[in-house]
Image (tube, rainbow, N blue to C red):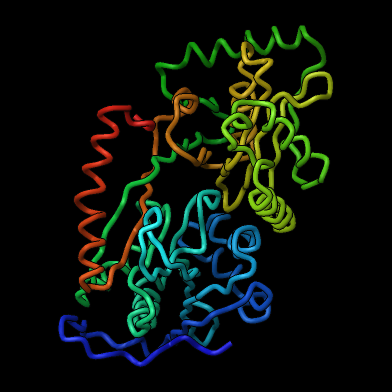
Length: 395
């Protein structure tokens, strides 16, 4: 495991910012195999919990699950900042030869993808500034990359500190908007669970009570929450998801072995960490709607959901969401994060969204200036034309 840190080269077109690496923090940029992580980074989990907004997607098990599912044979480039008390910041990356939909470039891409939900620089909440400087110092000295690409970074992020430092040094930065992820700030315990939901959809939410009554006429109906990961429950979800429209578009977990491997590993680890919640709506013992959830630091996240289209007239997915929100409010949870794109079926519950974007740091070479022009000028123009012709899917 030899370090990748290289001596800084003197490049006339770069402006070096007047800050040294923090005397209290030591930066490192090294390649790790999947098997080496637990031994070399034992405090990653505690660091993720000390982040300003701790989320399951910053936990090491989430990154390891992505790694095992999609890049198990490859080494990751992990940049860290440490002080006397241990790990203070971490940025896990993967080397690739392309960026932004396959355009050739030596790229350090976030160790994440479509199923990772979101990505960010992980740091202790009180040390984001010094950590960002230390990590950028290590990245700046490495000459093996042209572009750093961080996928689906939320608007309230820590990665932006790296972009600001890079720009101070004469590097280029770019942002490509991706998802408007809906979320619902939940009201206090013992209050109306839907008090913060849009009033204009109040009649629809009330109609769900009637639909539930009609569904109860079809047989024994009950809601269930399960905090354990079992092969049986996982198989039930895969089968339910594969029975609907996602199967026809190839978008199910079971349609790709690597995706199935990722979720199996991630959910097993989430269960061991005490983060897993598996909600289901069952008719005569059989699930007709299910939602995979993660609960951490008083916030709930819903990366996957499925329902039986044979019961679509009863809105089983909405019935389950209604139950989940009520259960979370009763448990004192502060937020329901729907994740994924802004979509019609989420409107009835919330109008709040959290903007996400792919964020880039680009070396100011001819290739880099071309890449930044593509991201900042040509690609947005093509997107506007596409939306003008076919509509914005998140509008």
